[in-house]
View 1 (cartoon, helix red, strand yellow):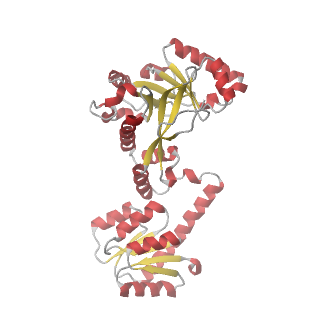
View 2 (tube, helix red, strand yellow):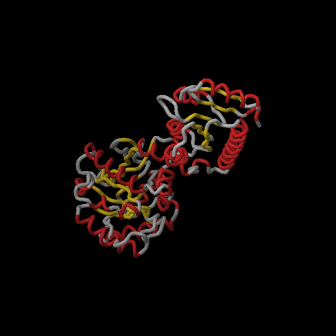
View 3 (cartoon, one colour):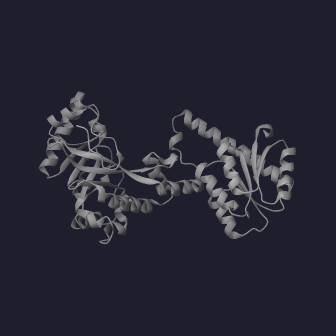
Length: 383
C-alpha cells in the first residue's frame, strides 16, 4: 500500500528530517515535510494524509500540542511521536491524546517503516469501518476513540450554547415559557444525544450540567419578563450538590425555572430522591416530568417527583388528529393531570390539525415547530 500512502513528517532538525524523509521515500511512501507544528497544521488544512510522524520537542508548538490540535479536527488519523528526551509526562500526554506510537530517537529505519506501515493499515481499517457505518446510517452517532473523544468533548463544551424554543399558551396567544435546549458548534456533536452520550462515557456529566445551568442563568437576563425557563436535567444532575447550593447562579432565579426530569432515564440511582425534589421546590424551583409516554415513568416517578408540569412526548402527539387511540389517551392524561393540579405541555406540535385536535382534547400549552424551531435567543412564536 506504500504507493498511495501519504505521510506528513515534522521535525525542526533539518538533518533528521532529511534522513527520515529518505528512509520513507525509499520504501515507497508519499512524504510531505514540515519543520514546525504551525506549518504542519497549514498543510493539513489543504490536504488529507494517512499518517503523521512528528518530533515532540519543537519551538512554538510542541509535538504534543500539535497532536492536540490534530485531534480537534480528526479523531482517527494515526500520529506517531518521536523524542530524543523521553519523559513520563510527555508519554502520558501522548497516550491521553491517542498517539499511535511513542518512539525514542534515534529511530531505527526498520522501526520507523514498520510503525508507519502498521499505522497506515489501521488507519485504513478505521476509515472502512466508518464507511460501513455510514452505509448503515449510523456513522454520525459513532463517538470514536475514548481518548480522542475527550478532546472533542472539551471542544464541544467550549463551543456549547442554548437554543430556546417557546412554549405557548394558545388560548391567550402568549408565551408561557422557553425550553433551553443544549447545542454545540462542534461538528461531530451537533446532535445533543451524541453530546450527552459523550459526557456519559467520559464521566463528565456533572461538568456538562453545571455549564448548562450557569449559561441559562446568564441568558435569563435577556428573557422576556414573566416567562418560565425550562431546563433539562439528567438524572445524575439530581445528585450534584451544586444544584442545591443557595448561592448558585440558577438558584438566584429559581422562581422562574422549571426543572425537566426526563422519563427516558431511570431515577433509581438517585438517593433520597423525594427529599431532594422537596428541597428544590423549597428553593422556588418547579419540577416537570419530560417525555411522558416514552420512557420509565410510572406511579413511583409521579410520587417521588410530584411534578407541577407534565410534558407529553411528541411520539404521542404525532398525527394525533388521525388516531382515535392517541386522542383518547391524551384526553384522559390531560383530564387526570388537571385533577392533580398539574399543567400539561404538548411537545412536538407541527401541524395545525394536530394543534386543533389537541385543543379539542383539553390541551392548551404547546411546544413545537408549528410555533417556532429552537433558536439562539428568545424569539417570538408564529401564530
